[in-house]
Image (tube, rainbow, N blue to C red; front, side, top):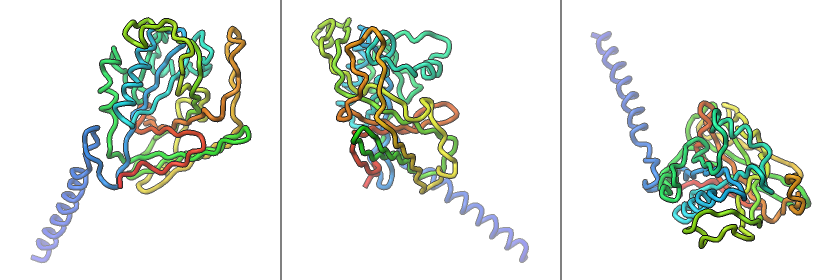
Length: 290
């Protein structure tokens, strides 16, 4: 009898633990873009990487769609990666091109959501696709604090986990805003049909990747529930080398127009699981729901 009683007690305990684990999983909040925020969870932002060029008349379609997305949601993180015969050509683009289009040429415009998802053509009609990748309840958050002064950058990037993760990578970009240069435009219904657009304001322009552009590994020991991983960058403000046929473009980055983007990707498929943008000299808290 005692053996049967102990067996029954053991089985009941296992069942209770199993039910508790199932309940925990079932009670995790909805992470979709329309779900209400649940206290203690992080907001989830969508990363849009726009492969573009000042010479590319069709690229205004994507920039217009990005503008629309940012007006619909405050959870949109934008990066413009210039390529080709362009004053802001990013020379380190090859690893990204090989990642997203390993067997095809980079024929602009090209755009990706959360690094790997194709933004369906025409992007201006599929803004909701980007918005659907945002949310209010995720378990990994980012925050940045920086000082940009006297030609130097000191930047702290923090990644906090509310769950156990492994095999994640961190990517950190330095961007520049308010770069004025003409932009080709082949659309009569965008930007009043002007072609080229003079003194077009190019924003979110990728100027440097402070990590490996495909990401650097976050130690798994720093990816446990409740942990915060901090990555510090103390560097001089980089200078750029414009293509030789743009002699009037300054190689210097304006420190007042610097911003940063940090995002975390999964090591197995390079998909971004959360992203954050910060201005220079901004000190952020995590986007934690109250």
